[in-house]
Length: 288
Image (tube, rainbow, N blue to C red; front, side, top):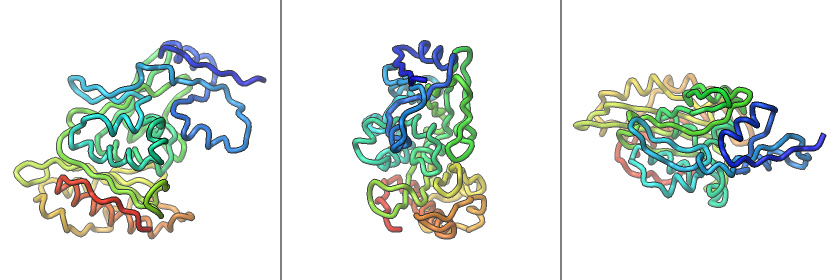
């Protein structure tokens, strides 16, 4: 059978096509084409790059909304509060500048790689995923949207339309650290994002997420609970108990062993906590 290609000009048209048959969605294409390798294209392609309504960043009464086609360069160029510092730092780590120019935020999530740079930074912002089909709209927390390695909660006929970040997560400052085998253009060995809200020198809210150390990036809820009520200055040199990282499930691969990943996660979470406590952007880490 011949491969079909469609480039709808409206979201309704795209959703109607998705409801009729199985399509492979093309957005930035930075994962789409490399995944093919030398194999010929056999799937029907739905190109959503004509959907202008899915690109951009807006603020409404209760949330910041990032359109699904918003690129990492868009994130870097947009004026955002200090709570988004980790997301901007992660945006700089997504491949090269050329990749950042076309790679989309939603594509990074839908690709569902355990090493997706954007996921920890969005987890600490309590991100929700807006999903649409021809007959319904729904919202799925990012924490449950990615269900495993290369797996998501998307159903037949559905398309991610936006990422929603509630206003309650916009307080405080944040930081992101990524560890790789070299300085640029590298897949993560481990990465961490931290967001801290502080009042009168005391932590009032905390969110900590670790990526590339489990099939799905994880929030460290027990660590978050212990941080609340602590003097923020105590976080600068605070040793972290290994028990906080017990729920991680790193693997051994060519980039690092499971033991190394768990130790690295503990170290970079500590550094991200210190950086968020200071409200300063941390130096990039690139020593394996």
